[in-house]
Length: 303
Ligand SMILES: Nc1nc2c(c(=O)[nH]1)N[C@H]1C(S)=C(S)[C@@H](COP(=O)(O)O)O[C@H]1N2
Ligand SMILES: [Mo]
Image (cartoon, rainbow, N blue to C red; front, side, top):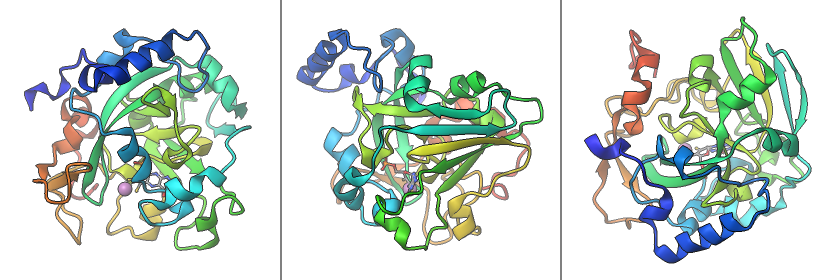
Protein backbone atom coordinates (compact mmCIF):
# COMPACT_ATOMS: atom_id res chain seq x y z
CA UNK A 1 0.00 0.00 0.00
CA UNK A 2 2.85 2.34 0.79
CA UNK A 3 3.90 2.07 -2.80
CA UNK A 4 0.69 2.99 -4.46
CA UNK A 5 1.83 6.51 -5.01
CA UNK A 6 5.33 5.80 -6.04
CA UNK A 7 5.27 7.06 -9.50
CA UNK A 8 7.97 7.99 -11.75
CA UNK A 9 6.28 5.57 -14.13
CA UNK A 10 4.06 6.15 -17.11
CA UNK A 11 1.92 3.43 -18.65
CA UNK A 12 4.74 2.80 -21.07
CA UNK A 13 6.72 1.36 -18.21
CA UNK A 14 4.05 -1.10 -17.24
CA UNK A 15 2.66 -2.20 -20.59
CA UNK A 16 4.24 -4.20 -23.38
CA UNK A 17 7.17 -2.58 -25.06
CA UNK A 18 5.72 -2.59 -28.53
CA UNK A 19 2.78 -0.48 -27.46
CA UNK A 20 5.13 1.91 -25.74
CA UNK A 21 7.26 2.21 -28.84
CA UNK A 22 4.17 2.95 -30.87
CA UNK A 23 3.30 5.62 -28.42
CA UNK A 24 6.73 7.17 -28.72
CA UNK A 25 6.46 7.14 -32.48
CA UNK A 26 3.07 8.71 -32.10
CA UNK A 27 4.42 11.39 -29.80
CA UNK A 28 7.30 12.08 -32.15
CA UNK A 29 4.85 12.76 -34.93
CA UNK A 30 4.87 16.48 -34.45
CA UNK A 31 1.15 17.08 -35.01
CA UNK A 32 -0.20 19.15 -32.19
CA UNK A 33 -2.50 16.25 -31.33
CA UNK A 34 -5.31 18.53 -30.40
CA UNK A 35 -7.18 16.00 -28.34
CA UNK A 36 -4.41 13.90 -26.91
CA UNK A 37 -1.06 15.66 -27.00
CA UNK A 38 1.08 14.59 -24.10
CA UNK A 39 3.08 17.19 -22.26
CA UNK A 40 5.90 14.83 -21.35
CA UNK A 41 6.85 12.20 -18.82
CA UNK A 42 7.93 14.71 -16.17
CA UNK A 43 4.43 16.01 -15.76
CA UNK A 44 2.89 12.58 -15.90
CA UNK A 45 4.63 11.03 -12.99
CA UNK A 46 3.47 12.74 -9.85
CA UNK A 47 -0.08 11.52 -9.51
CA UNK A 48 -0.03 8.26 -11.44
CA UNK A 49 -0.30 4.78 -9.98
CA UNK A 50 2.20 2.12 -10.95
CA UNK A 51 -0.50 -0.56 -11.07
CA UNK A 52 -0.90 -2.22 -14.43
CA UNK A 53 -3.41 -0.42 -16.63
CA UNK A 54 -6.33 -2.31 -18.09
CA UNK A 55 -6.23 -3.15 -21.78
CA UNK A 56 -7.65 -0.70 -24.30
CA UNK A 57 -10.37 -3.24 -25.12
CA UNK A 58 -11.46 -3.50 -21.50
CA UNK A 59 -11.52 0.26 -21.01
CA UNK A 60 -13.48 0.90 -24.20
CA UNK A 61 -15.88 -2.06 -24.29
CA UNK A 62 -17.03 -2.33 -20.69
CA UNK A 63 -18.70 1.00 -19.94
CA UNK A 64 -21.47 2.81 -18.15
CA UNK A 65 -23.05 5.54 -20.28
CA UNK A 66 -26.81 5.26 -19.83
CA UNK A 67 -27.48 7.72 -22.65
CA UNK A 68 -26.69 4.72 -24.88
CA UNK A 69 -28.33 1.97 -22.85
CA UNK A 70 -27.72 0.26 -19.53
CA UNK A 71 -25.76 -2.77 -20.76
CA UNK A 72 -21.99 -2.72 -20.34
CA UNK A 73 -21.48 -3.20 -24.08
CA UNK A 74 -24.22 -0.76 -25.18
CA UNK A 75 -22.00 2.36 -25.14
CA UNK A 76 -19.38 0.73 -27.39
CA UNK A 77 -22.17 -0.31 -29.74
CA UNK A 78 -24.16 2.93 -29.94
CA UNK A 79 -21.97 5.87 -28.89
CA UNK A 80 -20.57 6.32 -32.39
CA UNK A 81 -23.94 7.92 -33.21
CA UNK A 82 -22.98 10.94 -31.09
CA UNK A 83 -21.49 13.88 -33.02
CA UNK A 84 -18.54 15.37 -31.14
CA UNK A 85 -17.24 17.84 -33.71
CA UNK A 86 -18.01 20.70 -33.47
CA UNK A 87 -18.33 20.72 -29.68
CA UNK A 88 -18.99 23.66 -27.43
CA UNK A 89 -18.86 24.00 -23.67
CA UNK A 90 -20.84 26.71 -21.95
CA UNK A 91 -19.00 27.99 -18.89
CA UNK A 92 -21.05 30.27 -16.70
CA UNK A 93 -22.32 31.27 -13.31
CA UNK A 94 -19.85 32.83 -10.90
CA UNK A 95 -16.99 33.30 -13.36
CA UNK A 96 -15.28 36.40 -14.75
CA UNK A 97 -15.42 35.25 -18.36
CA UNK A 98 -18.70 33.41 -18.94
CA UNK A 99 -19.25 32.22 -22.46
CA UNK A 100 -19.40 29.44 -24.97
CA UNK A 101 -15.98 27.94 -25.52
CA UNK A 102 -15.24 25.65 -28.43
CA UNK A 103 -13.51 22.40 -27.52
CA UNK A 104 -10.79 23.40 -29.97
CA UNK A 105 -10.10 26.68 -28.16
CA UNK A 106 -10.10 24.92 -24.79
CA UNK A 107 -7.52 22.41 -26.03
CA UNK A 108 -5.36 25.17 -27.45
CA UNK A 109 -5.21 26.76 -24.00
CA UNK A 110 -4.60 23.60 -21.95
CA UNK A 111 -1.47 21.53 -21.34
CA UNK A 112 -2.26 17.88 -21.87
CA UNK A 113 -0.58 15.31 -19.67
CA UNK A 114 -1.01 11.65 -18.76
CA UNK A 115 -2.53 10.38 -15.51
CA UNK A 116 -2.80 6.69 -14.70
CA UNK A 117 -5.62 6.46 -12.19
CA UNK A 118 -7.52 3.73 -10.43
CA UNK A 119 -11.21 3.96 -11.31
CA UNK A 120 -13.80 2.44 -8.96
CA UNK A 121 -17.47 2.13 -9.93
CA UNK A 122 -20.07 2.13 -7.16
CA UNK A 123 -21.11 -1.30 -8.55
CA UNK A 124 -17.83 -2.66 -7.11
CA UNK A 125 -15.80 -3.23 -10.25
CA UNK A 126 -12.62 -1.29 -10.95
CA UNK A 127 -10.01 -0.62 -13.60
CA UNK A 128 -6.72 1.21 -13.99
CA UNK A 129 -6.91 3.74 -16.81
CA UNK A 130 -4.15 5.79 -18.45
CA UNK A 131 -5.94 9.04 -19.19
CA UNK A 132 -4.70 12.03 -21.13
CA UNK A 133 -6.10 15.42 -20.35
CA UNK A 134 -5.67 18.44 -18.14
CA UNK A 135 -6.45 19.55 -14.62
CA UNK A 136 -9.95 20.91 -14.22
CA UNK A 137 -8.41 23.72 -12.13
CA UNK A 138 -6.65 25.05 -15.23
CA UNK A 139 -9.94 25.35 -17.11
CA UNK A 140 -11.74 26.97 -14.17
CA UNK A 141 -8.88 29.43 -13.71
CA UNK A 142 -9.09 30.29 -17.38
CA UNK A 143 -12.74 31.24 -16.88
CA UNK A 144 -11.85 33.16 -13.72
CA UNK A 145 -13.44 31.97 -10.47
CA UNK A 146 -15.41 34.62 -8.61
CA UNK A 147 -15.17 34.86 -4.85
CA UNK A 148 -18.74 33.73 -4.15
CA UNK A 149 -18.32 30.39 -5.97
CA UNK A 150 -18.59 27.30 -3.75
CA UNK A 151 -19.60 24.49 -6.13
CA UNK A 152 -19.16 23.43 -9.72
CA UNK A 153 -22.04 21.88 -11.67
CA UNK A 154 -21.61 19.84 -14.86
CA UNK A 155 -24.03 18.69 -17.55
CA UNK A 156 -23.75 16.11 -20.29
CA UNK A 157 -24.97 16.64 -23.84
CA UNK A 158 -28.73 16.20 -24.23
CA UNK A 159 -29.44 15.05 -27.78
CA UNK A 160 -31.96 12.22 -27.84
CA UNK A 161 -31.77 11.86 -31.62
CA UNK A 162 -28.16 10.69 -31.21
CA UNK A 163 -28.45 9.19 -27.73
CA UNK A 164 -31.32 6.72 -27.75
CA UNK A 165 -31.18 6.11 -24.02
CA UNK A 166 -32.39 9.66 -23.49
CA UNK A 167 -35.73 8.64 -24.99
CA UNK A 168 -36.35 6.69 -21.79
CA UNK A 169 -36.65 8.84 -18.73
CA UNK A 170 -35.45 6.72 -15.81
CA UNK A 171 -32.63 9.26 -15.55
CA UNK A 172 -33.67 12.92 -15.45
CA UNK A 173 -31.70 14.12 -18.48
CA UNK A 174 -29.34 15.75 -18.96
CA UNK A 175 -27.01 13.73 -16.75
CA UNK A 176 -25.78 16.12 -14.07
CA UNK A 177 -22.93 16.05 -11.63
CA UNK A 178 -21.29 18.42 -9.19
CA UNK A 179 -18.32 18.98 -6.93
CA UNK A 180 -17.50 21.29 -4.11
CA UNK A 181 -15.13 23.99 -5.41
CA UNK A 182 -12.18 22.72 -3.37
CA UNK A 183 -12.73 19.22 -4.78
CA UNK A 184 -12.94 20.64 -8.29
CA UNK A 185 -9.68 22.57 -7.80
CA UNK A 186 -7.76 19.60 -6.41
CA UNK A 187 -4.83 18.68 -8.66
CA UNK A 188 -6.08 15.08 -8.98
CA UNK A 189 -9.36 16.28 -10.52
CA UNK A 190 -8.91 15.78 -14.22
CA UNK A 191 -10.65 16.49 -17.49
CA UNK A 192 -9.89 13.54 -19.75
CA UNK A 193 -9.62 13.96 -23.50
CA UNK A 194 -7.65 10.84 -24.31
CA UNK A 195 -6.81 7.28 -23.28
CA UNK A 196 -3.50 5.54 -24.06
CA UNK A 197 -2.48 8.62 -26.03
CA UNK A 198 -5.43 8.33 -28.39
CA UNK A 199 -8.47 10.56 -28.65
CA UNK A 200 -10.98 9.46 -26.03
CA UNK A 201 -13.59 7.19 -27.64
CA UNK A 202 -17.20 8.34 -27.60
CA UNK A 203 -18.22 5.56 -25.21
CA UNK A 204 -15.76 6.89 -22.63
CA UNK A 205 -17.16 10.42 -22.82
CA UNK A 206 -15.74 12.24 -25.84
CA UNK A 207 -14.61 14.86 -26.33
CA UNK A 208 -14.07 15.64 -22.65
CA UNK A 209 -15.20 14.01 -19.43
CA UNK A 210 -14.49 14.51 -15.79
CA UNK A 211 -12.32 12.05 -13.83
CA UNK A 212 -12.41 12.27 -10.03
CA UNK A 213 -10.38 9.21 -9.03
CA UNK A 214 -11.22 9.15 -5.30
CA UNK A 215 -14.99 9.15 -5.93
CA UNK A 216 -17.32 6.48 -7.29
CA UNK A 217 -17.33 6.42 -11.07
CA UNK A 218 -20.73 8.02 -11.55
CA UNK A 219 -19.29 11.35 -10.38
CA UNK A 220 -17.01 11.27 -13.44
CA UNK A 221 -19.54 12.77 -15.84
CA UNK A 222 -19.05 12.24 -19.57
CA UNK A 223 -19.36 14.36 -22.72
CA UNK A 224 -19.64 17.67 -20.89
CA UNK A 225 -21.36 20.67 -22.52
CA UNK A 226 -22.00 22.89 -19.52
CA UNK A 227 -20.01 23.94 -16.46
CA UNK A 228 -21.57 26.32 -13.95
CA UNK A 229 -20.01 27.80 -10.82
CA UNK A 230 -22.60 28.28 -8.12
CA UNK A 231 -22.94 29.26 -4.48
CA UNK A 232 -25.30 26.38 -3.65
CA UNK A 233 -24.89 22.60 -3.93
CA UNK A 234 -26.15 21.58 -7.37
CA UNK A 235 -28.57 18.69 -7.98
CA UNK A 236 -26.81 15.57 -9.29
CA UNK A 237 -28.38 12.76 -11.31
CA UNK A 238 -27.89 9.66 -9.18
CA UNK A 239 -28.66 11.60 -6.04
CA UNK A 240 -31.91 12.79 -7.68
CA UNK A 241 -32.76 9.23 -8.71
CA UNK A 242 -32.08 7.65 -5.32
CA UNK A 243 -30.68 9.89 -2.58
CA UNK A 244 -30.51 7.23 0.17
CA UNK A 245 -28.19 5.13 -2.03
CA UNK A 246 -26.13 7.78 -3.86
CA UNK A 247 -24.85 10.74 -1.88
CA UNK A 248 -23.55 14.01 -3.25
CA UNK A 249 -20.02 13.22 -2.09
CA UNK A 250 -19.82 9.54 -3.04
CA UNK A 251 -16.21 9.25 -1.97
CA UNK A 252 -14.94 5.69 -2.30
CA UNK A 253 -15.14 4.31 1.23
CA UNK A 254 -14.78 0.61 2.11
CA UNK A 255 -16.34 1.30 5.51
CA UNK A 256 -19.62 2.67 4.19
CA UNK A 257 -21.56 -0.04 2.39
CA UNK A 258 -24.09 0.59 -0.32
CA UNK A 259 -27.49 -0.28 1.18
CA UNK A 260 -27.66 -3.30 -1.15
CA UNK A 261 -24.04 -4.51 -1.25
CA UNK A 262 -20.67 -4.30 0.45
CA UNK A 263 -18.12 -1.72 -0.67
CA UNK A 264 -15.27 -3.42 1.19
CA UNK A 265 -13.86 -5.10 -1.90
CA UNK A 266 -13.97 -4.87 -5.67
CA UNK A 267 -13.47 -6.90 -8.84
CA UNK A 268 -10.70 -5.65 -11.10
CA UNK A 269 -12.08 -5.89 -14.64
CA UNK A 270 -10.02 -8.27 -16.76
CA UNK A 271 -9.07 -10.51 -13.88
CA UNK A 272 -11.79 -12.96 -14.84
CA UNK A 273 -15.02 -13.53 -12.98
CA UNK A 274 -13.41 -16.08 -10.67
CA UNK A 275 -10.44 -13.88 -9.77
CA UNK A 276 -9.99 -13.00 -6.15
CA UNK A 277 -11.57 -9.70 -5.21
CA UNK A 278 -9.20 -7.01 -4.05
CA UNK A 279 -9.75 -4.81 -1.03
CA UNK A 280 -11.20 -1.39 -1.73
CA UNK A 281 -9.02 1.41 -0.42
CA UNK A 282 -10.15 4.50 1.47
CA UNK A 283 -10.67 7.28 -1.07
CA UNK A 284 -9.75 4.65 -3.67
CA UNK A 285 -6.12 4.85 -2.54
CA UNK A 286 -5.91 8.65 -2.75
CA UNK A 287 -6.33 9.21 0.98
CA UNK A 288 -2.99 10.95 1.44
CA UNK A 289 -3.93 13.47 -1.22
CA UNK A 290 -7.58 14.16 -0.42
CA UNK A 291 -8.40 13.27 3.19
CA UNK A 292 -7.76 16.86 4.29
CA UNK A 293 -10.69 18.02 2.12
CA UNK A 294 -13.05 16.20 4.49
CA UNK A 295 -11.47 16.94 7.84
CA UNK A 296 -14.07 17.07 10.58
CA UNK A 297 -16.81 15.67 8.35
CA UNK A 298 -18.82 12.59 9.30
CA UNK A 299 -18.23 10.45 6.21
CA UNK A 300 -21.06 8.08 7.09
CA UNK A 301 -23.51 10.95 7.14
CA UNK A 302 -21.95 12.84 4.25
CA UNK A 303 -21.57 9.73 2.06
N1 LIG B 1 -23.22 11.27 -18.92
C1 LIG B 1 -22.93 10.17 -18.23
N2 LIG B 1 -21.77 10.12 -17.54
C2 LIG B 1 -21.45 9.00 -16.84
C3 LIG B 1 -22.33 7.89 -16.80
C4 LIG B 1 -23.54 7.98 -17.55
O1 LIG B 1 -24.38 7.06 -17.57
N3 LIG B 1 -23.80 9.13 -18.25
N4 LIG B 1 -22.00 6.78 -16.06
C5 LIG B 1 -21.06 6.98 -14.95
C6 LIG B 1 -20.63 5.73 -14.34
S1 LIG B 1 -21.75 4.91 -13.36
C7 LIG B 1 -19.35 5.26 -14.48
S2 LIG B 1 -18.83 3.89 -13.63
C8 LIG B 1 -18.42 5.90 -15.41
C9 LIG B 1 -17.90 4.88 -16.40
O2 LIG B 1 -16.85 5.41 -17.17
P1 LIG B 1 -16.17 4.49 -18.27
O3 LIG B 1 -17.25 3.88 -19.09
O4 LIG B 1 -15.29 5.41 -19.05
O5 LIG B 1 -15.40 3.44 -17.53
O6 LIG B 1 -18.99 6.99 -16.13
C10 LIG B 1 -19.85 7.80 -15.37
N5 LIG B 1 -20.25 8.95 -16.17
MO1 LIG C 1 -20.48 3.49 -12.02
